[in-house]
Image 1 (cartoon, rainbow, N blue to C red):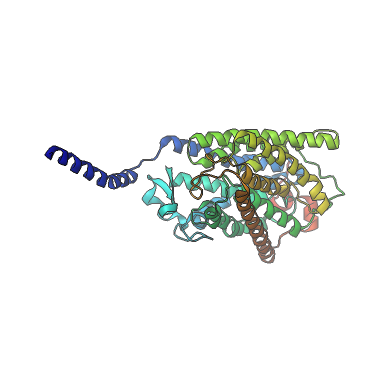
Image 2: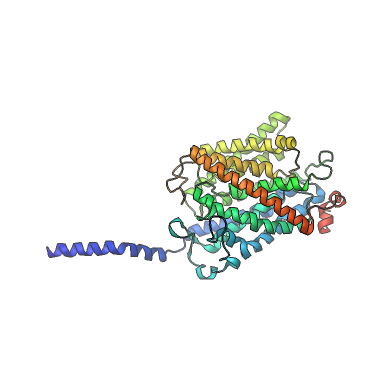
Length: 445
């Protein structure tokens, strides 16, 4: 009897100590080197999407007199947003803050030196999201998203914005439009995160946000001089093909990297990304072939990007079959948006920033509402996952509409502020001569 009593007492003490032991284990948890290695790789891949990927993709589609200026825009935004993100963007996007915006606690990355070698947790309390990577890697990965989003917008106003306006507008837009939306969607305190809307890698934060901003820019700046009359054929489609290929490869970091670890969800995200891109490229190609008589190089590379855009919000939440469906719908939707819709409405979205990123971002964000696979789609806000149903679709529609409206209004206001400060558009004679010479004093030989 005494032996049994002693055994029972020991078991009780062990059970009582279990929470403390678990806390001690969590406190001493180490960074996972495999996850960290994958996230370092993914970060480099996403940066590759902007420079040189997007720079080449866009430069290949403009006229010869604007090739250098177009590349300059992507390169400058990469440097500019890096500093903006370090100074205040990261704090506004991922500081604790409230449901609408982060705070200033991480300005100039304050506090990073105290936790540089510890696993990073986002948020606090029951809603906290833990990772197995250092914060330096997380914030750098997110920085590459903050870089490419405003760079995408430049495709809508190609050939006609002042360089000084580009610089000022992008600083303001990154802080006052991009950072709040990133906080809404990806921070546990954000209201869209709490709503349970699904956005794995940036359907709302990146593509709808940039696409809508591009549409507003195209409307506010007006059409290019000679639009509809002059020959505006791409200068060098081979550059665009190389750029599109780099975007396709880099997108694996964009989507599979958003798993924030080297696990099964990252593997599935990579697989469905490839499938959706291929499906969309073929859908656009065959649609163009059927309606115009020939499949074009520009069409097939645009289709691939359309599929990559549409699968982005769904990539960590769907299986291969639904991914192919998303890709096909995106290819057809992007083709319609870049041709019929643009001409019907009369706006000059130079390189189809809205036609591809805006429309296909909406397609992907809405379709995941019905196609999400429960076991894959579990998040901190949806611990059981979403089976894909009308309720989830309505959440997706609500988040999509909110980001659409906020981006449109915010972009319009910031364009007007920029116009008053430095002027938005180059004079007509400078536009005719080309931005390479008038804005940068250089030209392609």
